[in-house]
Structure formats: structure tokens, C-alpha cells
Image (cartoon, rainbow, N blue to C red):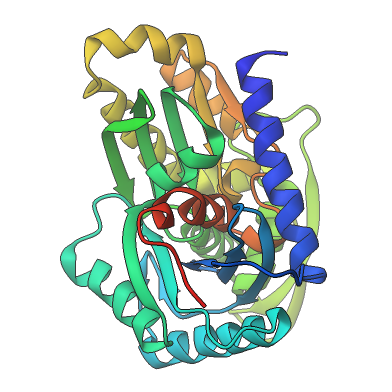
Length: 335
């Protein structure tokens, strides 16, 4: 079994464990609990590990309190996390989950990073650390030398890894949500039809692609005719959707290439040998791996189940189960 297969198998195991404990928490005596919080663009996740670093409980809730990596609804975010924290404490039979860690996009400024910290503290946690998402994701992917591209709902993070640490990184506000907005704008411009974000996301999932398909796909959608204001059905083609996403995809591939260009020359051979690993909900866009491989000349691998139930649009479980696994090892979380 190759190193890549071992990495993806381990990643699958972590996700599978988290899925199970979300449904059926493991209530056993533990001297210490580790909590991790993800404020994702599409979903908020709180995960709990025991003293042996096993996932024992978790909750997730879809929310619209973060946009493009920034907290836009402070009070809403605090309330959601506070409620999830209370539910987890009740499920585990503990008086209080006290300590937590979180991850933020690389390059996040002090203001945005401070907002994430304030939200988690406002929900009743004492935050032990903020870690950039690429470093966090790599604690699960276990890449010693290579590159990670994590495309979530609000941002895409690119990181070059050497000896398990980041040597070059970049975050761009171009990801799943912007894909949806690009589709909405295209449908409006070409067909004079107004559609909502949910329809745009369905289009992206069902016929969206970054590379030519064989065969190409079609989908019938409904919207409001901007000419007469009446409901109208049209058929959308995958070629058109690909064209709508072109500008978004160019920005992502350009950011990847620019990050690779800043990589120390001695690491280039490692990246070529190891390739680029795609994670996050954006990794599910058809042909995205082919497009990036075509643009960079480097093999691209998609992490198994990059989205999964708890990480829709964001790769959130990968980000923060690993935060629990490594970051909280410094201080720990106590009952």
C-alpha cells in the first residue's frame, strides 16, 4: 500500500469515527476531554475527543453566520455554539467542556482571527489556540512533503508542506459560495431568469464541472422570468455552467501556481513526487483535479470523502478533528 493510500485511509477512518459519534456518543469515563470548534461558511462543527484522542461526541449545524471566512453574525454564532456545547455536555454527562481550539484560514488578519476567538469565548469556552486551517488539515492527511488545496465554502487555502510544516501558503476568497453566485449571475445574464442560491448549488452539484465532460450533462431548472415576472423552466448545459465558473477557477489555479512558485527549489521534487491533495467541498466539483493537474503539470489527488456529512462546503471535520488531535495536546481540555 502506498503512502498516499495510507494517508487517505487514515483520513477516512477519522471521518467515519466522527460520523458514528455524532449519532451515538461514547459515554465512558475520561480524565480529560478535548474540544474543537469550526466556524465554517456553511456549517458550524463542535467535536470532542477523549484522553486517548478518540472522537467521542460531535455536533454540527448549518448556519449563515460566516461569509468569506469572516464572522458576520457574532451573536448568532455565539448562540449556536453555546447550544451545541450544552447538548454535548448533557450527552457526555460532564459538568462543563472548558477548553477548545479552532482553525482559521491562512493569512487571516488580526481582526478576523480575533472575531473567531471572541465567538468561541463568548460561547463559554476558554480557547487554547488558533491554528491555520492548512496546518490543521495536515494533521489528518499526514503529509510530510507536498501540497494541500482546501476549497471550502468561503475560501480556498493553498499550502506547501515540508517535514510536516507549512513553508508557503495563501488564502483566496474564492470557493463554493462564489461558484454559486457566478452561476446565478450567468443564468440571469444569458436567460433573463432569476434563480436562488439553493438552485445554483443544485446546478453546481448535478452538472457543474471544471473540465470537459464525456458526455456533457443537462438539467432543467425553474426560476422567475425577469421580463414578465412569471415562473419559467429552462434547460441548462454543463458547458455553460463551466463557462460561468471559469473566472472563479482561474483565480484558484492562479493562486495555486503562485504559491508553488514561492516554494523553495529543494522541495519541488517532493511536490512532483507526492502531488497535490485536494480537500473540502470544492474538491467534489467534477474535473477540478484534472484542471489543476493540467495547469500545474503535477498529479492531483482527491482526499477520500472530502466533504462528508459534517463538512459540507468546508472540509470542516478534517480541519478540526486534527486541531483536537495536535493543538490541544499543549494545554488539554478539562472537565
